[in-house]
Length: 46
Image (cartoon, rainbow, N blue to C red):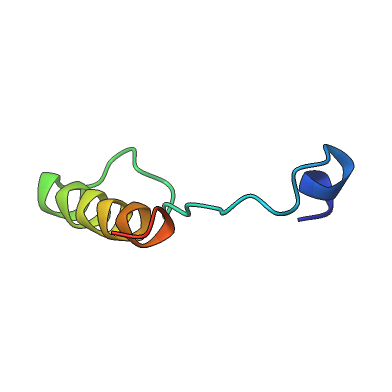
């Protein structure tokens, strides 16, 4: 988070995606994608 402050964007919302994605099963990737979409919807107020 200190990097965000250094860049002057500490107030921006942060979308977090679990890593690593390489080597994961398609079902796991789909779950992470759904979680990311839910986070994004929450961040933009939908």
